[in-house]
Length: 432
Image 1 (spheres, rainbow, N blue to C red):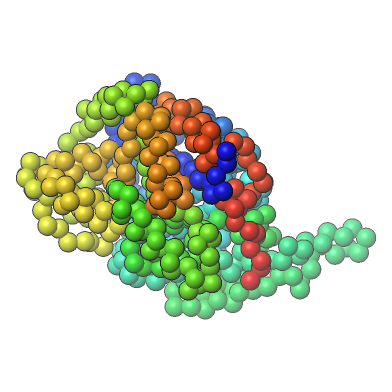
Image 2: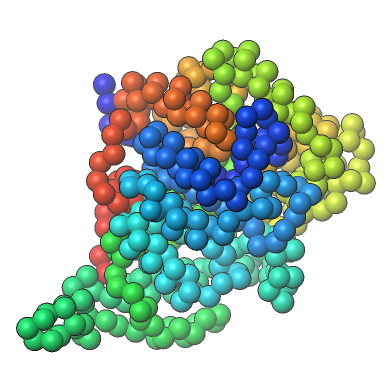
């Protein structure tokens, strides 16, 4: 039996795994600079019929909070390499709207779309950590300004992608006409933050435009996603919050002439899979036993935007204001801490497990049941899967959980279509 509404699955690859100490698990990979290991991860995701692989990014080195994430390949370069060793799965890379320029980003992702034959996705992020600015000679703008810049940035990139008509390339050997100049156009953008003439020096993408991914959960982040994004990665800790966030972003779409189905919402989840619930809990306990207090507190400090080493670990979570960093993560984990009366140690353990994302621990049936419940309750259109470590931590999900979802008719058994837009059920956009 096949469900009319189909679940979507993305793979979030973060260093050697999403658990801060996942690299210490027996048999886990211990570096994220080995292309061969990354290619194996990609092939596993494609074997599991995932919609896309997604890689986050930071623009600074921070060995204190997530050490295996500090050493990694640049996302776009890596995805171009993976395009050569995969054939169907989407390829998403992060590029900052604060520390890049629209022309370069538009050109790079158009190139990836051509290289991959229509599988490119751009994760448009505003960048949240002030440490990044030191590598670009300027300070990080405040939260509201970052989103104002991002809004114009995405408009310019989209306009550049639409600069070529599909039939602009003529290549008529008889007449000697190679390009039809009438099918190219400049955008002549002159805005508050960017001045870009265009057009790009690369033709229209196989997808028309690459897929746009976003992860902002704040008010400005949701507004930007409703106007520009095809996929939203959300941060959540429980189903009620997830349902509220899902409804909030979906109800914004009609104001931009969009239907609810035009935006795919994928909460992040770190699944810890065991043959039984007990075995899964033992795996998670083993992973948690590898935590280093220094790294755990550094990661929590990064998430909350302030130094947490001054507080008593076994005392209550202090009443903390939101800072100019990643407000969604801070708001989500602090709300859970207050609801459940956590100590600061509880909070740093929670945050260290999956960097503030939802941890789902159990047997294959337990995990499949939970994902199905969230999906049916409209808390998600699918999930951004964040394995605790590679390769086993991901292979367990693909080999044990995915077949259950397929048997229930919730997830594809085979790929259909050729592009990432096809996988997501999105039409190829007309040239604006």
